[in-house]
Image (cartoon, rainbow, N blue to C red; front, top):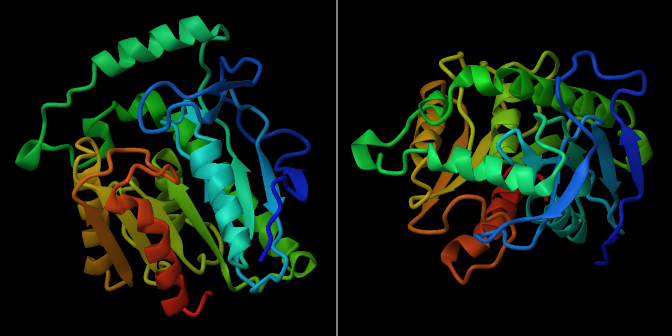
Length: 292
C-alpha cells in the first residue's frame, strides 16, 4: 500500500484568527534538532498559525487519526513525531491529520534560542528518581509558565477534531472512528481534550510519553487509552503510571507499555531498542478495538 510523502491538503484551523493569542511569538522557524534522540530531525518553533495537514491513504479503512507532535510547548518535533507518524498511518490505511498547534514564543536568532534552551535544561532536576520521581507536570516545570500555551494547544486540538468530523465524508472517514495520538506535549494535549472534550468523545486517544489528568475526573464515556513510556525517561515515566491509574480507576479501557529504555522523545526514531517497535503494539491495539 503506497502512501504520499506530501500532504494532500493543508487547512488553516482559524481562518479569521485564533480565539486567543500567545504573546511574543515571532516568525515561524524551521530548524534541525540538536544532538540526542532526535538529532538532525526537522523541528518548528514560533508557530502562531495553526494548521491541519491531511494525508490520505490509497485504500482508506474509514479511521481518522489526528497526530500531535511534542516539543514542550516551545517547539514542534515535526518530523519524527509528526510527518513520520502520519506516513506510517497512511501506509496502513488510516487517514492522518498532522496538527500544527500554537506554541510559546522563542528568540528569533537560533543562537539565542539554543542558549535559552541550554539555560532551561540546566535548571531541570534529573536526580529525582524512583519514589522521588515527578508525578505531575508541575513538579517538572511551573504550571503558570506553560498554562496559556497548553490551553491554546487544546483549543487548536478541539478545532481540528471539529473540522475532521465536519468533513469526514469527504475524506472517506467514519465520524465515529476519529482518534488522536500525541507525543510529549502533544500527549498532554490529547489527554486535556479527553478529560474536557467540549463535544462528543474521540474513538480513542494515544498519549505517548506524556499526559496527565491534573486531578480532573475522567469522564464516564472517556475513550479507550493507549500509552507508551520508557523507564529511563526519568522526568515523565511516573506520570504515565498515574495516567493509567486514573483511567482504570474510572473503569475506562486502558493499555500501558513501559520499556526499560528508550529515553524521552523517541517517536519514530530507531535506536536499536525494544521501544523501536511501540507503533506495532499500537497497531495491534487499534485492531483489537476494531479500528484497523
